[in-house]
Image (cartoon, rainbow, N blue to C red; front, side, top):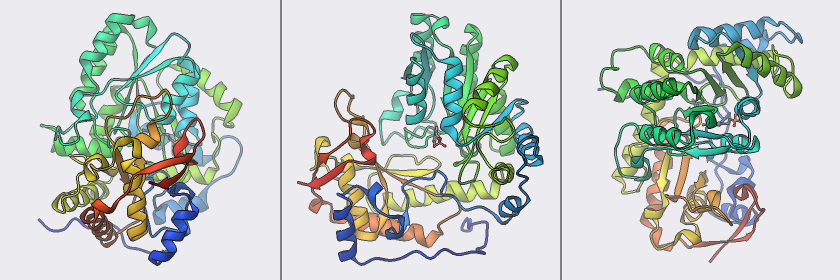
Length: 452
Ligand SMILES: *Cc1c(COP(=O)(O)O)cnc(C)c1O
């Protein structure tokens, strides 16, 4: 088979700057070893997140110029709405400024004290919005997901037995909706199979509970279904996407991921009464129902982004990028979460530096090492992010290398692999880290660290 290439050519370039190792050391110290405090200008390859960091196409930029900025009834809104309708089959569609705005409205409608919302794995803002409504957010992943080396093809699946047991225990009236996150961001970008979604649907039907998708990476999930699920190989991705949405009663989407835009979100609700309520809530905080906190030009860019993300040559390149980096890291001995998912590589920092115990933040040590050695910015997803007073320690100490969409080339990725492999070769020199100062909540954004 030939190399799977980037299915685009480059029309505009944005220079990136190489720093010296002395400069990087100073920058890292000034940031108190917290990469969130480093200016993006001082980063060579930025893998902090895949959210809102993608490159838009020439057609999307053309849409930006076409954007109609009327307050109500803009044709840009209708183009956006029709694209979402065509793709998902949902009639009732609202734009929002990003995913969490959709979540806030959804859980203001469905959440309340005493209720429980099950999910395969709540994303942090989803959990925060569920809890803000007074409800409890419960993760029901499959046990294979907690084992970094288990090569289960659908580690994002919901644990259907645990869902049944929960409903039997608390009663369906305590569960306002079941949510399934595709792909599972907190658990490694792992996909959910169609079989699993159908099973969850049937449990929901038995108990008349609504099923919502957190569909931020619906296209990557559908492509991984096509690649990995028996019987799905010959189906167009569009058809798989449609089946995923057909199985659900609604969805929240952050368009900063598979919408291929820098800002935007979507809320879809099948139930007409709930939709009317959602429109009223949207007007309260986001703006009118035909713009939802966005400019008309943003709606145009989204309409085009939701089309391009379903192009199979794009998805082949996208998923191959992650797979390629994973293969090369594994060749170099670097321990990662296997198999890789859609949008990111997760380094298993616990195995990368076994000499650093979880309370000395091995993930943060690897993050600092990657920046020091090569100006690569990654993010810790382990005891810094999830630890702290009153929290259960995470199962794995991970470092996420998130892939911005259509931004970096294969040689950029080769460079990242070289940096990670070199760091791994010198891993014995990595030192543990302690927190000097941290706020009580969401501490990873602003904490200050020092090396032990
Ligand atoms: C990014 C993300 C969100 C929140 O979206 P924002 O646009 O950042 O508000 C929700 N769920 C998942 C799975 C995500 O990845």
